[in-house]
Structures are given as C-alpha cells and as structure tokens.
Amino acid sequence: MNSEFGLIARYFTRPAPPGFLGVGDDCALLPVAAGHHLATSTDLLIEGRHFFADVDPAALGHKSLAVNLSDLAAMGAQPLACLLSLSIPKIDDNWLQRFADGFHALAQASACPLVGGDTVKSLSGIVISVTVMGQVKPQLALRRSAARVGDDIWITGTLGAADIALRLLQNRLPVNPSLLAATRHALERPLPPWHFAQQLPGIAHAALDISDGLMQDLGHILKASDCGAELVYNALPVAAALHGLDDELVQDAVLSGGDVYQLCFTAPTDVRASIEALAQGASIQVTRVGSIVAQPGLRIKGPGSTFIVTKQAGFDHFS
Image 1 (cartoon, rainbow, N blue to C red):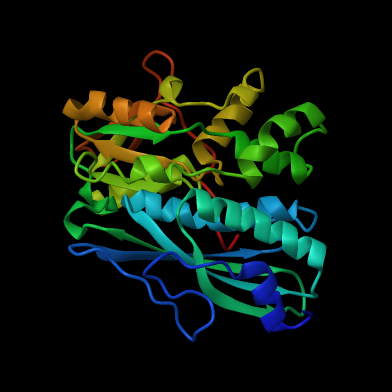
Image 2 (cartoon, rainbow, N blue to C red; image 1 turned 180 degrees about the vertical axis):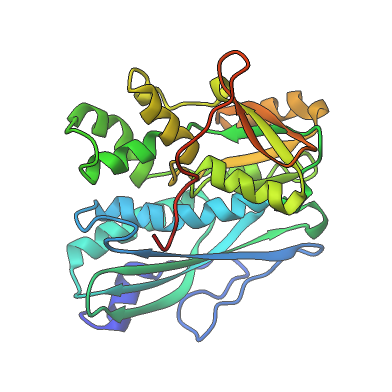
C-alpha cells in the first residue's frame, strides 16, 4: 500500500454518487442539471503559510475542503464534487487516515464527494490543493458586481475568533490557553453556510466569502459594483470569545481578520423577513450590518457621529 495508487485506494477512494464517474479513470464525469452552469474554484494550502506543521490532520482535512465550499457558497452554487491534490514528504498512515477522515466527513455533510485528484512526494512540507465544482442558474448567481444602492449588507456567523487564534498561535499575543481553546475551532474548522447560500439566488444580489478580512473583501464588492457602503460597527457580529478583550485588538480582528469563511452579501430591504426565515431554517446566524450607498468608499460608523479609521485592510497573500 506504500505507493501512489495504494495511497489513493486506501484513503481517498469512495463510491461515486449515481450518474457520476469517480476515482479510477483519467477524468471524473459528473452531470450538470439542465439550465445550470458549472461553478468551480480552487485553493492552495501550504504548510508554514496557511497552516502549522502540528495542526490536527483531521482539522486540516476539514479546512482544506471548507475554504473551497465557501467559494461555492459565495456564488449561491450547489456543491457537486471536488478534486484533491496532495503533496506530502512521506506516507504516514496515521496522518493520512485522520486527514482523510476530516476531509470525507465534510464532503459527505456538504454533498460534495471526492471524485479525483493527484498525489506526489513533496521535497519539503505539505502542499494541498482542492478544486470544487458546483452548479447554479447563471442568471441567479451571486456576483460581486450585482450590489445595488439601498441594499442591506448582511453577514453570516461571527467575526474575529479565527484572527485571535492565529495571533495566539504565532505568539503575537500573550499566552492565554482559555482564549485559544475558545477561538481555535474557528480557525481550524470553519463551517461555511453552504446550505443557506444555495437558497439566496433570486433573493440576494451580491455576495462573497470573508477569507481575507471584512473590509478588504467587502471592498471587492464595492469596486465591482461601483458603489460605496456604510457599516455600523456596533452591529457587527463579534464572536463571543472576544468579549472583554482590548477594544483596539477586537476592532482589528473583526474588521481585518481573515480565515472567517462566512458570507457577506447584499439584498433589497423588502426581503429581510425571508432572509431571517431562511437562516432560522438553516440554523445559522445572520446579521444586518449596514447598507450600500452611492458615494464611493467604505465608511464605518462608530459611537455617536464618529467614524472608525483602521490600521490595516486585510490579509495579503504575498506579504
């Protein structure tokens, strides 16, 4: 079993859904429903850059797929299948089993089965590449360029916890075991709202996932849609674990912290009740945090009539 094909057979081969051709041929084959387009996205995770060497392999398997499901959710697409390419220095059966368990558990929960990929020996650390495929009606896809003046701005889940966990693990904050325990799950096991997102086409206008920080990512919508936004800072859904921390630290984590993998989306004001009902049915938190305006730029209202000025915008993949 200590070969590429043995590794694939043991850890990454699962029965394909009916109508699919999965692992075993040069290409996977999958059907796309009539009237839909294929939505696809890929992400790269590199040891030392995107995850620590001592991360729980099951959590890493989960996150490897989660960060891609988040992209499908941002388009309102239904997951169909995924591909996994894995480069590792050596075959470690215990590590591989735990990684595969974490990956396949989320693949099953999200109805996004693994249907192919590649494996190769790495000359340094672990490198993971996942490609997801989904389907969406093209006229209803949630595009960054579709925000309209007057739209509400919504956020799913909460903000800030993953950034605080990362700072603790990088020793950029004083050692705090209880705070790390309360925030680490958000960093290593994000859970994008893929089920809720599939119900947004036809209701919401624009969307994206918060991967590099709220300010930076929302800025992409504003640029693509040629508009501006006003956020109310006190309305932002701050993770409960951050309560009681230094105000400036929390502000930076909430506005600029990445690795959130929740949605920021815009929708007309007359669908507020529908959005809240969908969120309740999907058992997720949604929060209305501001509105789209005609004046370019992003303004964040603080207490009273003040506006918040931040030190940083978000994560830079080449910094």
